[in-house]
Image (cartoon, rainbow, N blue to C red; front, top):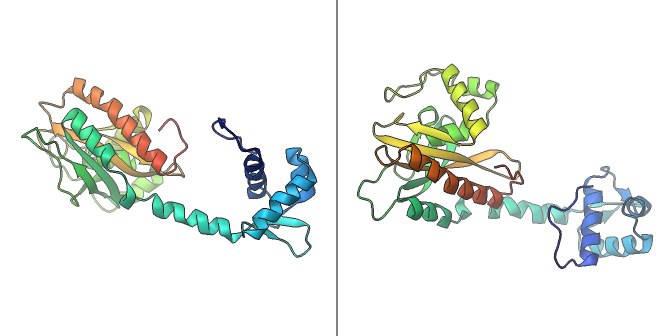
Length: 265
């Protein structure tokens, strides 16, 4: 059985026992588990297990088999669990995390998702004090291979998925710095995976430099990415490295919001 990630400061013992029983049932066989099996695995009295199961049964969280000896999780858990993705979707993202980055570094911050081979900007924050604002418009789509956001978004794809994504099209060059071969793109993506962030050094627009990192969901799949972009004369190597720390925290915060348990994200 999986242990709790963090020790509870003020544990409610009955609730902890209930959660332990639920985890046993979650990992048990499809036809259910017996009270005797739960009692043995958790070193818990049969009467205690029975009382907890009866309470869960009364509220629809547990079902009892026709033989009255085995218990399994009920549909109530599915009903509750199905609400989580609805509450934790991009429409409900707290955009304060983007504005905090924007105000801290005084550069444009974008939140993007992948739509096949394009990046769609679904949220952004533009600095108020800086005259030279950069980046795409809200809702605009950009090519994944020529942007930091795009590279962050596809960095988790396998080789077969990448081959399929670019099978019927060439990598269009937008500037002299745009990657133009799939082999070179794969090398860049390997570097993104290794270092945890992606660059766009004037690859889509001359004079524009970006850094981006991925956002993960509960399955630790990349579902979005955040970028900080600015004119190249401001986004030098020193500022990029400074922005990297804040960007990492922001992406980690959103990943937690979407249920990611990978602390290395």
